[in-house]
Amino acid sequence: MSDEFAIATRLYYEAVVALTRNHVPISSTDYERLREAAEGARLLTEVRRIRFEEHIQGHQCVSED
Image (tube, rainbow, N blue to C red; front, side):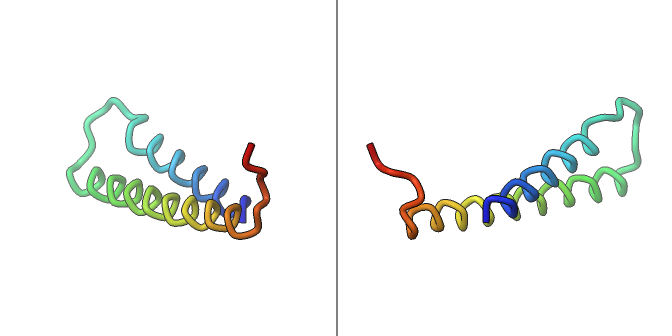
């Protein structure tokens, strides 16, 4: 479960880097493709984060001090 969250977070990071790394002009088509990839990765990260938090709460993997 934590691996899925870590992988999704990494993919989001890489999508954002791809979107922002070039300071040269890109076509609107390329920009839209990169923006959609970043948004899709962000949504996947959010889903994985929620599942990971539910896992922790459901199995009480972390004590509540």
